Figure (cartoon, rainbow, N blue to C red):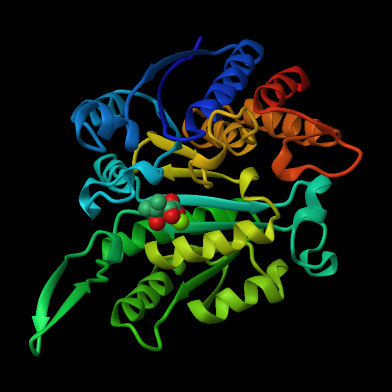
Length: 356
Ligand code: IPM
Ligand code: MG
């Protein structure tokens, strides 16, 4: 029987509540599909700052590296907002992405049928099965480039650097082409090649990689146009591949098109099997501890983990189906609609387990 070691980074705010529900669902899936799961916990973000003085303790990196996969809740909160940049909880998040080599960030934007009315975009524009996969480069570009402060003509100034190497672009492009091959074979590469040299290299490199994927229809789009096209006609997209910062921005936009940010999962993958799985929403400190957080994005992140890192596709599908079924009649407050059964974070976890 396969036995997996999972590190839990519960983090801050609603992180612990939502991860606890995801663990419950994973345990249930393990029982049903005949595999074992062992958990270990480690600190990341604000809770790590409070306990150890740094947002990413060495011990956390070591534990994650020794595991098959990592589940992350969320990090950050007002308590740590005034700390300097490299001491903030977010620095822990960037640090763990770098330390584990998590270069490929998969952010699906899908609409669960019963939630269609939650999207601010008109029904006929979204269509019946909006399903976009954003592939964001996660360990390069301006997030990891050199930065600093200096003086220009006697005035204080600051600078950041966007730089990509060909191998960095090639490996993220391959992830995106491989995904497109398993989906509708359409890939949109997003850049700003009319202005940025790094984007011109990005585009050239993606075109070179495309020669290995003759079946995939590749097109290129400037990032400003893509932001517009996402609301104008989201149905035109299948897989989108883009840089770290453009992916950060476009994935927030795409999540809103899908209705509720409380529903969307993500996977961050390395060159090996190790992946980090987290909801794309934040730590929601305003509702932490009230028991009303929506655990579904984290539960769906577990499904992604089963699919991409643990090679248990049947269990992944079963969890996704259980979530869809549960949503037919039950809602947490963030996605509540008249006539539905309003449930707590914990009840939602229990209902998904029951549906499984
Ligand atoms: C995300 C977040 C992070 C990012 C922040 C919290 C550093 O916005 O995962 O999209 O910009 O990558
Ligand atoms: Mg973001």
